[in-house]
Image 1 (cartoon, rainbow, N blue to C red):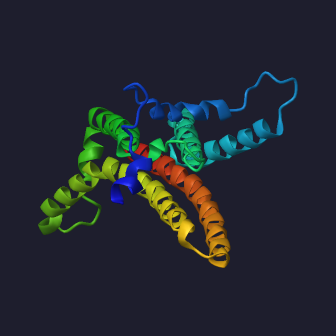
Image 2 (image 1 turned 90 degrees about the vertical axis):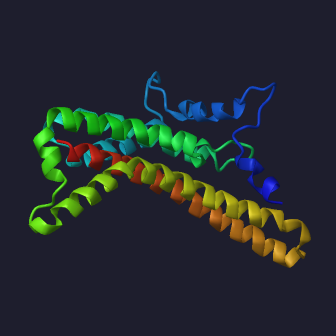
Length: 224
């Protein structure tokens, strides 16, 4: 039962020994609106408004000299939200529900921020390990706590995104597997519950992509 339950999240399913399901991560590129129309479409206008709003919000968190860096975080949000939404479609592999994808997104960002901060703002990074107003007796413990909290940041980013995406999928799978043994009245209630859960999962897909991008922006702003 457990093997069948988690088989829908198995990244090793393949055709001719090729893991083609991971190609679903690139399907989001098909949803990006193209700009060769004579007049913008409604989808392109909507997406332009979304990206412009995110650019303004991320720019507030960044320093004035790093305003252009918001483009990187908007692209990160776009990649995650497209993959989260694609995972809600039947028979589409959800790459963001695996630590292989989420950790590959979080770890390079965190590593680049840390290297930039320690090489360019060394004194500030050392000072950041001891919060202002810390008693001298607690300084060694605060250095240890701050160091551990910085190290686990990519892990928390990756686990948060993967856990939230796989939790809703598991609940939908469990409810769907019980449909064959229910009476028609209970089946209608089950379908209604699944529609509500699917709507909540769509909201979670957007929220988790936004949280991932915002936290990455905050980590970048801390090293400046």
